[in-house]
Length: 151
Image 1 (cartoon, rainbow, N blue to C red):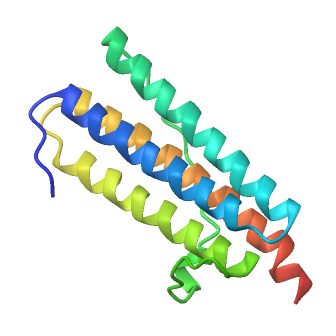
Image 2 (image 1 turned 90 degrees about the horizontal axis):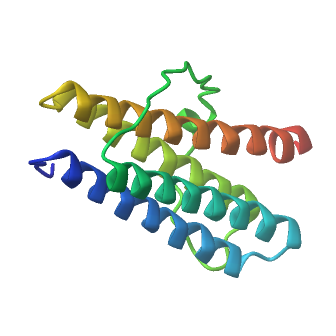
């Protein structure tokens, strides 16, 4: 795991992770076979852009406010097989990949919060973990509504 020497290191790491998520969702949107699928992934990419902007603002201003909230976990992704992103994947497979990515991001930020050397760094990681948990929930709801209900 990467070592962080300052809150700026933490924020730079998080900003880069959000950009990776933007790129991932834009790539899924570009390869989407339907307009609905393209819209879903484009909207997630735009949400990640907002998170990146928020983190950039936190870094620039040097302060932030954290609101701790409990996020529901439907645990749908806990029962999914690993699926790799491919250009020809189905909507269901794309949602599974997205849930897995958000779950991995949550676990990363959660683990970093546990290892944080000070409360300020811990609060940043807790906040980022909550954001990723919200994303995963949105994908789980999407999966529940458009995949599970069709079966």
